[in-house]
Length: 350
Image (cartoon, rainbow, N blue to C red):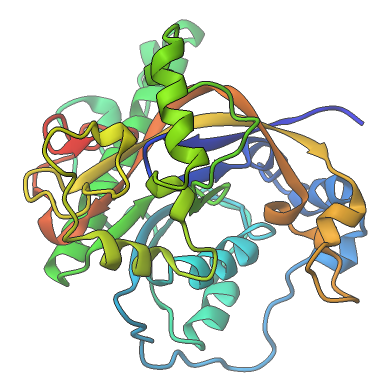
């Protein structure tokens, strides 16, 4: 089988990482997405298609788990087939309870029936359509109703203008989303895509040397010693805790004076008033299957774990890619973000 690629967003010093299933973005682009996902999973079209609900599902009051819940800003286009797993995963692991979604006007599919189901279990979801959040910029391609000129339609220019419009679209949406969440006094928020998953950054012996210890064997050995001894905070991550519980436990912790933060037993990034944004670097993962018995370990009988990407694909690469962020919306600036990979120049750490 062809070896696709997927990405993982990861920082050796961060308690969390983001799995980005890069090949899913390719598989879900267009009307034939469901058939291609079914083929990738080795199953049938009928077993993975999302059917519209035949009953009226009314959202219930937002669930408010302790110590707090997460939020997310999500741009979506024809990702229905992978959206339920993304929602279920983050509903449980973070826990995610507030979501603002922008549906691309050119989408062939409508995710509303999926959102209705999650609204029925306490997730507060707002769907923005038809670029209703758009703010016109100074360039022609930054206008909501952009009609490319003859020059802009030329092949040598169209890619540049199209790419620049996409970047501007991301900046506008994420800025408007964070402003809305800030007005609601929401805290930790993901700025990610439907092929990305936030997870705990457990140490993996196969992950290779840390990037900040590159070509420095002494530095890397000191780091590994704190992992092996259980002193480093990555060695203390609790699989039964949520991401919110980890942050609440560490929010008032301080790295002792004279201790290298990279070797510390606590993570003190979550309550820095001047840096509400944490950057997590990204790593590639190959979509190579692992042994079925390993995939099924700990999974109830009758539940096929191979149908879930977060259980099926686990091989990750060694070299970091472009980063993405999590941000405390309540402390975020109101000015426009720089871009989706590093939201702010001075307010992001990592």
